[in-house]
Amino acid sequence: MHMELKHLLAVGMAATIGIGALSARTWTSADGSKKFEGELKVFDKDGGKVTIIKRNGRSMTFDITKLSEGDQTFLNENAAGDAAAGGAENVQEALKAQKVGSKLSKRGILEKIDGKKFAKYELTKAPEFYIVYYSASW
Amino acid sequence: MEKYRKQIVPNPKVELIHVSLDDEEAEATKWALEGKFPWPTVLAEHYEETGLSEYGAFAGESFLVDSAGKIITKDEKEAFRKIATLN
Image (cartoon, rainbow over all chains, first blue to last red; front, side):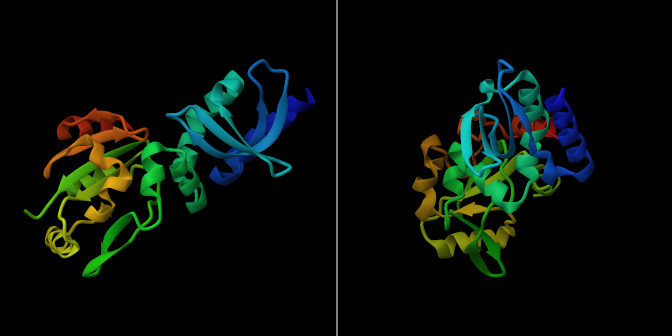
């Protein structure tokens, strides 16, 4: 009962405070035998992997199927958007978890026209899809 | 360009990556300035590193791929139809 109350409080606070607090919650294992508190760091929806930072600061990455059905639903319905719309640090972490994003997020790979020339550029979102457009002046 | 501003920029689930197939940066820059390209670009010197060369694309082509690199479609209209469902 105590854990359920904490869970409800965490969800309630997230709904009140907003995206930043949405990722901190009590997580439950798939069989319901283990619960732990932690903050969502990265959710790779395509790869089915999640990275959570526990209260002691230790980071854990594991398959989403290790979590309860409720946690999986939470991730699929909320966390993907959270990661995509989160801060710059979260964006970079989410990109690193992708096959495409990990290469594009390397420093110096992307550029963007700034004034009259190209300047270094970093992605500001970690999208699920990319339109890759190839062009040349010739 | 309008599709990019209206359907890609505000959508957190999709990004457009422009790959310049010009060998010389000066040519790529001139081309981008003429076209007023607003999107992130990979210049030729980094093309191989990105893995985006694996698709064997030619200038003028555009692919919709997922974050794992799987091609969803090579048809631009279909790509934007898919994007429209992501909001």
